[in-house]
Amino acid sequence: MIKAIVGANWGDEGKGKITDMMARESDIVVRFQGGSNAGHTIKNEYGKFPLHMLPSGVFYSHTTCILGDGVALNIPKLMEEINGIVSKGVPAPKLLVSDRAHIVMPYHILLDTYEEARLAGKAYGSTKAGIAPCYSDKYAKIGFQVNELFMPEADLRAKIENVCTLKNTLFKYLYHQPELDPNQVYDTMMEYKEMIKPYVANTNAFLHKAVDEGKNILLEGQLGAMKDIDHGIYPMVTSSNTIAAYGAAGAGVPPYEIKEIIAVSKAYSSSVGAGAFVSEIFGDEAEELRKRGGDGGEYGATTGRPRRVGWYDCVASRYGCKVQGATQVALTVIDPLGYLDEIPMCVGYDIDGEEHQDFPNTTYLYRAKPILKKMPGWKCDVTGIRSFEDLPKECQEYVNEIERQIQCPITMVSNGPAREDIIKRTPLI
Image (cartoon, rainbow, N blue to C red; front, side, top):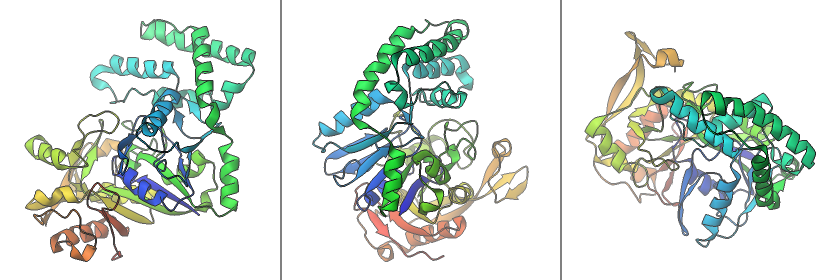
């Protein structure tokens, strides 16, 4: 059976914790898209770990972790991450890397950095991890798949020469930067080959066999629906599809085998990077929520940048759940909201004086203003509570109202950073 865990919002919803919890019951955990440009933070008996390339199932010895075909693979970052967790006492993970995954090359990172600098005030807020240039090359058919590290030298050198000819036009004439040396690019790829060789596999064949054997497979998405290249707040999106439907393509499994889709949604809103964010708050009000939020504050797991924060957005979340095909929702980090007397909730958009319940395209999204409904706060710490019925009535009603608004059953409520801080809930719908 295959389950997918994906984000309903802008990413940073707390998917890592939910994935970590569900990995206990999984044989295989697969990252199916994205790269080192975002991360999941896991807190367990070994410590606190911000993961960027590794799937969140790496802390379980019974789980095989896979980086699938759709991943943008930063090989040095992956090695650094493996060494980092092992150095803290975590057993070496059982890891397979798809021979069809595309490699993030050093020149991708340079291109990402130079382009953001060229755009200056109109930049996309890239993490400069080379993700967009990597995926651009993939679709232009000049990228390098992992298997190409093992092709005959003459063939690989010929492809490198062609790529360098194309890239050097940009480096020299657009960015006014030093040109690439094909020999250095080849040497780097040979270093990558030695690093990644122990992990490379035909993961498609491995997963097809696992499906036939009835293994429990968990697909782990990066970021959230609002950052999807097709369905998100384009162009302020990531460079891959973050929705569960792409899990089949990015992992290499039949789409009809995905039986459950758990959309993770934060009990307030947060976002890293630029783009339309209707329920965003500012100033002291935002700083107070940012300081209290998440696990140690709302700061990016990869970048360390302060996240933009806002009230829960029912319009965006309802859309996110629909586009993800969510069968259930895990609502996370409800515990930081206990300081508020009232908790605003965005229940509609005002666009040019008209109320809208459907999430619009970006052109109209920038003109949207939040229509807020205020819910009573519960004014206490709910961390450590294990039963939904034991939560304050105001907290229960806040969750119930979100469920009514997003029209998707909330089956889990997270009320703390630890693995065990999860409340199982019987949905009302």
